[in-house]
Amino acid sequence: MRTTAQVLDGTGTPAPADPWEGVDPEELARAARAQFARPVPGIEDMAGYLAAQVADDSHRDVLGPLLDGKDPSGVVVRRGTVLASWGDPAREEMAYSATKSVLSLVAGIAYDDGLLHLDAPVSAAVGLPQFEGAHGRAITWRHLLDQTSQWEGELWSKPTSVDAQSTREGTESAGGPPGEGWAYNDVRVNLAALALTALVRRPLPELLQERIMTPIGASQDWSWHGYDNSVLELDGARLPVVSGGAHWGGGLWISALDLARLGQLCLRGGQWGGRQVVSARWVDELWTPCAVKPEYGLSWWLNDDRTVWPAAPTTGRCARGNGGTHLLWVDPARDLVISSRWGAGPETLLAEVSKAVEPA
Image (cartoon, rainbow, N blue to C red; front, side, top):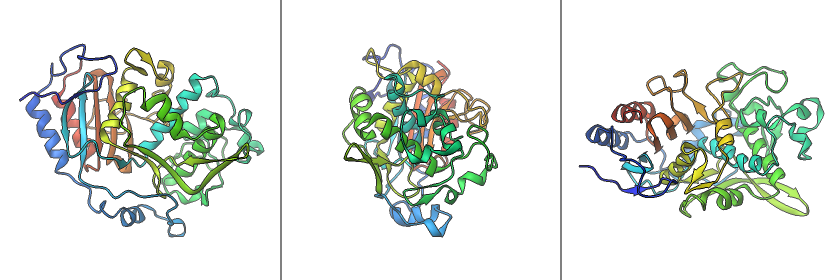
């Protein structure tokens, strides 16, 4: 039976075309049921679950708040309309590294306001000690957002060396200049959040709320956290600085439904309800391949060569966290958004849903 639970599309209602056109309803329903049946174990005790994710015992201490997880949840959105859902897609969950993609989306506000120039040195816009010295002065905003800064140091008591992801793929250029090597490093992403906070001179959650979440009609059931010690002293005020992941707690806490709205915003080139919330140019930048890591853009994963998800379409872009158990998939070719939380087998979900939905 065909049902349309909710229209999210920023182009308005009703949807400009039948969202069920080219969709196999039974196959889609099976994919949703199957994803709900693939829970991630242990998430009901987030402290214990998180401890198992951090390889270095010397820096396992959690600095930010934690939110215990529950059953898998998610939605499939086609042409702006929710066609399938599972679990409780309105429940707030920790987003893990999917937070990084939202951080880059917020950076787009500074870009659109003329504050952030992608290929300009960060040090030209903010006076932070982390960007002093020859290496620091060479780091650009692009380097921060596409994870090629190769910055070495300590931030909020966590050194860059503690993140095992930096060496896992062998794409780091030890001691090399910014832009020469790539590494997935939470400490460096936190540095990007610090620099962006200094640039806009206000807490990033306020900016996200005012400029993005309110215009796209998101709920109030989301929050973005930093650490107990992640504070920027600026003009006599103490500004909280959020984290870009959840290795040590914190990060973005958001529902599958609100995450899907962010995906729909990007799918529509930054437009919502006839309003340009984020520039189309910035969305293009988010999805422009990094020179030294072609499957990565500005903190978004690109499946062009099926490197990220071999069984999924090449037309997909995604935000993902915790190995994909947190997933926001955007496929412009199918006018499709998939938002999934705490479901194992994300590649299977992408393959099954994509099979059920013909290209638009």
